[in-house]
Amino acid sequence: MSRTVRPTPAAAPAAGAAARPDGGGPGGRPRAGRWAAPQARRGNAVPAGAWWLWALGLATAASRTTNPILLALIVATAGYVVAARKTDAPWARSYTAFLKLGLAVLLIRLVFSLLLGSPIPGTHLIVTLPEVPLPDWAKGIRIGGRVTAEQLLFAFYDGAKLATLLICVGAANALANPARLLKSLPAALYEAGVAVVVAMTFAPNMVADVARLRTARRLRGRPTGGVKAILQIGLPVLEGALERSVATAAAMDARGYGRTAQVPAGVRRLTGALTIGGLLGVCAGTYGLLGAEGAEYGLPVLLGGLALALAGLWLGGRRSLRTSYRPDRWGVRAWLVAGSGIAVAALLILAAGRDPEALRPGVLPLVAPVLPLGAAGAVLIGLLPAFVAPVPKEPSQ
Image (cartoon, rainbow, N blue to C red; front, side, top):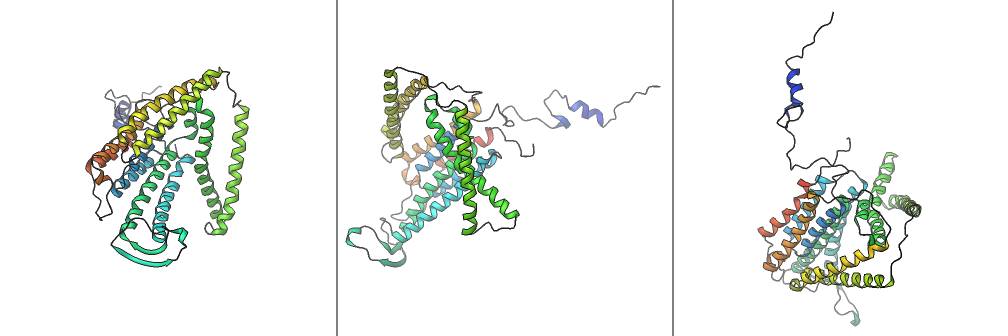
């Protein structure tokens, strides 16, 4: 005799909650909103070029100021985005290495100013070091002597700006997949792009190899610090880099890398002229934007150079037979990531022209740096990728 099993009162709501018409999830949990960041997958990942545009925008903003408060805010912005959107890939570990490199650059800059002096005069004497006498041909150079607060503060500002630039580059290395960056390059730059990508992957892979070897030595009860341990770790790291280079070369040769199509000689000459002229225009325009008094002509020259360079790249792409499998798609979220970095750079350039004293605090006389609220708000736009970029999966998933 058959029996009819009825759902218990506790199970009935759970069964109905799985198909709620109001958009709720199982168990009555509300689902993410329409504009909430989705889970990262292959189809919606942010292109590597977008991450590099975001990081270069932050680096450009850092180059326009020596205010330590703004520089610290840029570093905090880059670090927060990396912490929120980095994956467990090997290149994601490079941000810590760039952070340490930036701190080392800052300390070296201070030490050089302390020992070798500075052209910045000062009246606030801190200490007088023993000075080494130098011959007449070394005029303008001194070792030791007076150390003033003005020269140390100037060195600190200068070193902090360079350290921030390195940290922004480290953020791009930690977030952008180098292989996907190579796919995004124009066909005319494919050969140069391979060299650049291989160079960019060297640092992350070396960091991963060093961490792996140090963990292995720690598990075997061997020391991981000291000169002897570093020498013993260095040889396997170099051996691994050589093996990866050979494997990359073999893979490129097996895929027919280097084959090109025949194009007329006139097209080749026009391509070279447009590309070289465009790159010179880009360099001159960038120098004008980064300079203290060249912002007026820098932007038009930069835009003209970009137009010439893009025309040259379009013509140069005709000689390449390379096709792209599943190219990266620039969706709304990718444009928001790239646009946030560009917006930070543009707003800081404008702020540097309107209020240069706030973005570049002086050292003669000594003045305390202040926080310009407008520039600080512009830097905070760089946090947008932490909320719009797809959320990476947990390592356990």
